[in-house]
Length: 110
Ligand SMILES: [Zn+2]
Image (tube, rainbow, N blue to C red; front, side, top):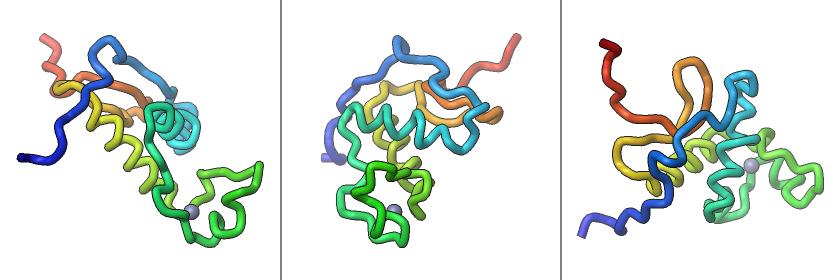
């Protein structure tokens, strides 16, 4: 056995840009984490004890962007999505900052 069986949710049919680079570092909060959550990702399997979350976790104005572990949670959200994506495709940020589901190992233009 090599870990749990990969359950594919995302395929070529889902490919595309989901977050424009204009969102910058907010893409995680506004796009990546919400998409992962929609498919069952839990950003806080255990309550976060960072200074911000410890006080604000239950606030209606809670902003995950201010969590000290924001970038780690964003990474985990991408890993969650990529673990549910067929081979040859990947979720993440491109060099120009767009975020979405992209083809892996794209061939050089001829
Ligand atoms: Zn936190």
